[in-house]
Amino acid sequence: MEPITVVIADDIVNTREDIKRLLFFEEDIKVVGEAGDGEEAVHVAEELQPDIVLMDINMPGLDGITATEIITERVPRTAVVIISIQGEQEYIRKAMAAGASDYLLKPFTSQELADTIRRVNEKAKRRQGTLLRLQEKPEAPLPGKVVVLFGTKGGVGRTTLACNLAVALTQEFRKRSAVVDLDVAGADVALLFNLNLPGSIAELAREPELNREIVEAYTATHLTGVKVLGAISSREEDYTDLAARLPEIFEILKEECDFLLVDTPPVLNAAVAQALDTADEILVVGGQDLPALRRLKADVEFLTEHELGGKVRAVLNAFVEGGLKPGDMEKTLGLKFTGIITSDVKTAQLAANKGTPFVLLQKGSRIAQDVCRLAEKLLQKETVKEEKRSLLGKILSF
View 1 (tube, rainbow, N blue to C red):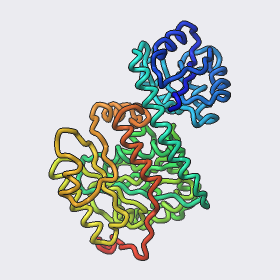
View 2: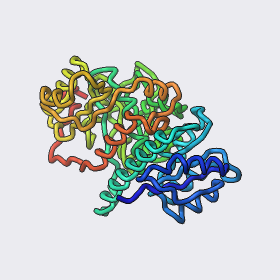
View 3: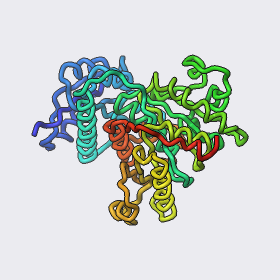
């Protein structure tokens, strides 16, 4: 097996030597180059095409974050791990936004460094494999895929999952993504992205005409490139009017995006029904406790009864090991989980309080990796085509 090739970029010679000593006895890791500043790091990365660049943030001339952004763009096969004494969340956020795959605080042990390198390399290779498979079958550009996150049980994490899936698709797989917030009462998507919205989707639906420029005027863009068509909290909106304009709004957004992640409230109103009818895929999100599992099964059965079962994928969120096993739950429910997202309350709460999705803030966490695996499955799934689609709006008489 070929060793993992590493370039060390740090302006302090002694630090580079210390890192080489830490990796000396790791037989599967090989240091192939060094750089003393950001500009040299870019040059060495382009020349040697290493698997990993260990990048210090504070270097003379071109800083580590800017160098990371350039390497990520010019040498996509190379993953960057930031190494720094700066542990402030703002530094981490900027590094992740620049494309870094992980963030390691100095000082670190040889075991911590080697484990990080192996984990990042494995993740990068898996992502490259997915991208290569997608490129093997070149097709004409298709309009974006609409993925609706649905469930009539509150508190199972649909909004958090929608936002982090969009970031994973954009940052990890270079797909253009947007999040549409249909939870007009809750309106939490903008909060999780820490964005000030130019307007609400409910206001957009009342525009006399719709075109790309008008929709763009109501859309905010996160630093990751994810577009957000959000809601501004209101409990007096007419969901029937919003539902009537959704197909047109979605079609306009699909021209500019590969994926539309649609967050929905835990109720079946007219707008949600229209979104379900329009969806290419429906992620029914449930929790691990018995009431949540019963509701998950009921939601899947309801959608199947109304001819939407071919688009349905079940997702188990906030999974805690030690309780019911996924296999047992699948057997009891009679369905297969497309994704299982590990529970990590600390990471999720920190990300929510910072207004930064955890896929960006804590890339190395298990919960972030679970979301990335689910994003990869969305890329591999073919859009379900049906001769006839049930219009749930008829059930709701809108």
